[in-house]
Length: 134
Figure: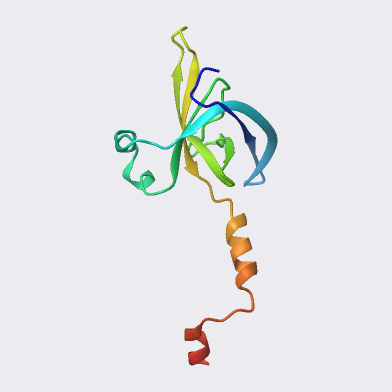
């Protein structure tokens, strides 16, 4: 791959199936060679306003990844980068036969695991305001 500073990046390929009215997700671990970079201000302008205030990054790769499609059974792949999870939400295909590659936009992904960990850390702890009320 001829991207700037290519690295081996871990990801989880996700699939979903509707079972008895509930979405069940399955994941397969994988890696690809690519590059991760921040979005520019100009790139942010092309996203809906509700998506601009969450963590976003762009991913360049020769490997096709699944893109999240809202309202469907197509979940986006999850890229693991800098100790965080990022869901693929947009795709641009560059197939010009010069340097074929994909450019993806990924959003910070919260699968609920972080909230549970935070809750476990705070169990049994009270704040000063709570002490005063009791």
